[in-house]
Length: 70
Image (cartoon, rainbow, N blue to C red; front, side):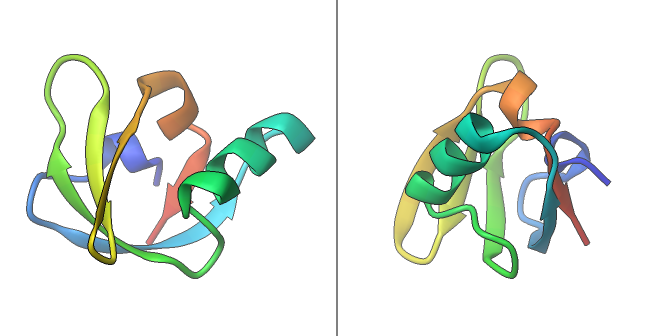
């Protein structure tokens, strides 16, 4: 399922990233790699806020649709 479907407070693991090299590179630079465990902080209007370890990251909805989680 895409990252945009995750509810606040839920912990998920990145299963796959759909998209070309630029999208993949940007997400990896933010810490969203395959196998990363992330926690959804905010998923309402605007960008999503997720926690990767101790870091908080804002991810736009379009890019978040390319992050498949389980």
